[in-house]
Length: 231
Image (cartoon, rainbow, N blue to C red; front, side, top):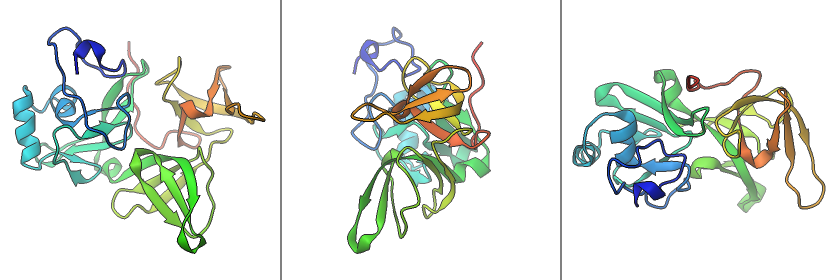
């Protein structure tokens, strides 16, 4: 796609060239992800050109969520873990306080898990409950213990749930869309709207937004390392 037409969340220079690699269809939307080759070159800075990035990917040296990337155009999106073991690099894709995608350096302990938002639930064979999570993941459980909008901390190896962060007062959220995109806030109250309207979240600082714009990232404090504030 043309750089000038790229999503506003992409942290790229718009006028240094005409084109930029668009990602293929996948677990993330175009707005909330970038192609693997662009991430490796422009965000990680592991190489200078797309040709070099494609060579690194072709050698299976770039991993996303613990799996080697095979397609240079594969989408790398919000909350994904990006690692380049040969260079001892590990990152989590998040948003800056300006609402732009960014890679946050993380240590080895953080590269083993992901936090996913529960987007939907379905009943599958045997009466079990399937959680449909952000990032294209699904988990089948025996009991219906979680609500849509909540977040779960899962291991990348085996997809085991380690923690549960409900969309409830006192918990920490990262705003993903809207005028407050990229802000980290604490929930004061969740207002249930009757009818077809979307539920609203009130924050401790007096602001508010709809629940669709919020991603719970911890209880009293964030369970993940966050980007440093912009000057």
